[in-house]
Amino acid sequence: MARMGDVLAGFHAAWEFESDSVLIRFERGIRTPKLFQALGERRIPLEAIAAVTLTPGRRGTVVLHAVPRPGADPLMEAAAGQLMETCDPYRLVLPPERETLAEYYRDELRPVIAGGDAGQAERYLVQAPEAPQHFKAYDGKASFDGKSVSFRWSWTGASSAKWKAGDQSFPVADLSGVEWRSPEVFEGHLRLLRREPPSVQPAQADQDPAAVVFGLGYGPVHESLPFAASVLAAVRACGPAALVPAAAPRRDPADIADRIRHLGELHEAGLVTDEEFSTKKAELLAQL
Image (cartoon, rainbow, N blue to C red; front, side, top):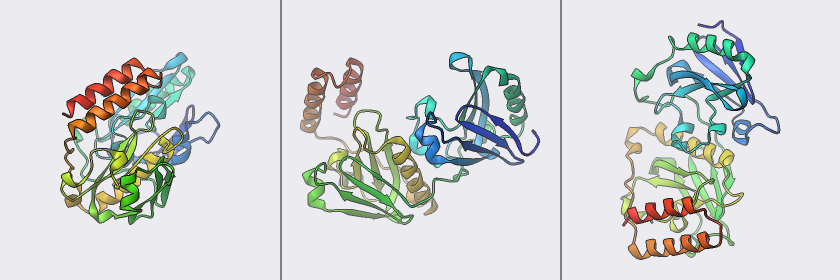
């Protein structure tokens, strides 16, 4: 293994190699992704790493990538593959002159990490961002104090269904999980999955009092994703009984037709590309 305390510095981050972990320290420069700045630093135990790769990057750079073990990191579990490559905290982008050094650390790490054969982690091995957490969504403000998630509705953005339900507070013990849909895609939202029957939860996030919806400038990744990870870790800490996946409820055909019409209007106005229109329309039709 590399000597304890060895540091490999790249663009936006530096990896410090320790006997049982890799400490990732993110820079706070203006060009550093906001998610990295929000995370500050993260300690990744070697048992949380499934693989280490070194591949060519853009503009002659090289990328050292520690692939997280499934179920080991609440941040990556909440992200569910939706992060852009440039915002992946497990990627270290390096200048070409450090490729030989990166090869050395890759080869040193491979024999001591958990490896792909380790399978799904039974518990989170990487610490989640700490509570309290909060962010402003399009239709309200979300807050988490470590024990309960609270939604306080905005009078300008919240639906009538949410206003009728009133401001909400959800104890972690009543939750089964968290659904995060990136604000960088159509219909981004944060939904709390409850342990009650799925039929109780409305299909649309903008009608669900257990969800907040994102919009331009509302619920950005660097705020809403650490929030989701923090809640998810708290739910896991309540025990496996709280992690029963919630089945997706079937949507009303009339509601789907309305959503497709609205999507068509956005497409005609040039706010949605041809590809986005086709993809989202197919997703909606698949729910019939």
